[in-house]
Image 1 (cartoon, rainbow, N blue to C red):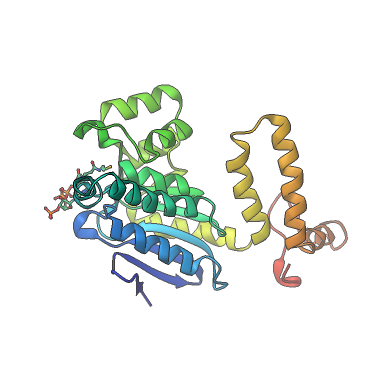
Image 2: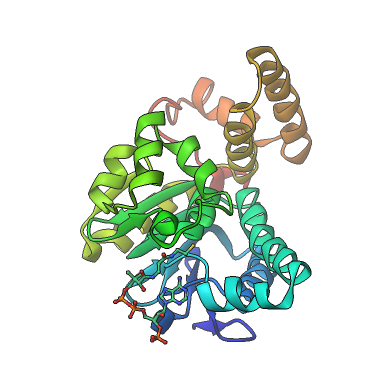
Length: 278
Ligand code: COA
């Protein structure tokens, strides 16, 4: 059953282990107002440690994923109130993107349509991203006279090769979902009518994995990007040892199923977690 955030601008369903969270301002192409940013943080926080789902998917109602920041409510109205209001609105927006970046559960951006500017923040926050071929991605900021802020330039520089990031940020031209996949902004693009089925398939693969290992892995991949090799080696040793304290049985059971029981091969798929629950 679909539930709504307190102001109705975020909709969500939890079904078969997947939390489907949606931007819900389709008439405004799901652009991010301060109200939406507050509601989204509240929804993410209320869901995060529930044990009835293991993967969160972020998508949008209607024709947009998100048309970026709300030019009226986020920019113009806060600028009129002064610097304090602008800074408060930034903290709210960046706050839920940060929260999503380090979310307890694996996250997937399911980009069903327009994705502009500030939308690159949550796009990058999600661990994986799948887009409709028909989706459009743009750093449109240059088209209305600002730089791609709110992390958008950083996202482009993180996900794209230098020349492509520069072209994308300076030219104000959109990429289709197909191009976004070729450029590495998303993992895959596929026809809109196949998008949800593919995302469900990916989510189900993740649901069968050890959740402690997934959280440790997704954090590790983000953290090591900014570390020297030696620091990364050290971090990874400690991260695994910390993970062991949350789940000491899973990897032992997995090793037993492979070495002793010979019931699966880790190179070809995940161990059976139902045998011990670990
Ligand atoms: N901020 C504020 N309002 C926005 C918005 C945004 N980022 N994006 C869309 N809207 C509003 C429009 O003003 C319009 O409102 P109205 O019905 O009250 O007139 C409504 O959403 C529908 O937008 P519209 O432009 O008519 O839809 P479209 O389907 O023809 O075009 C877009 C979709 C996304 C191409 C177009 O809305 C657009 O260019 N939006 C701005 C994208 C952008 O530059 N975002 C970067 C912000 S950092």
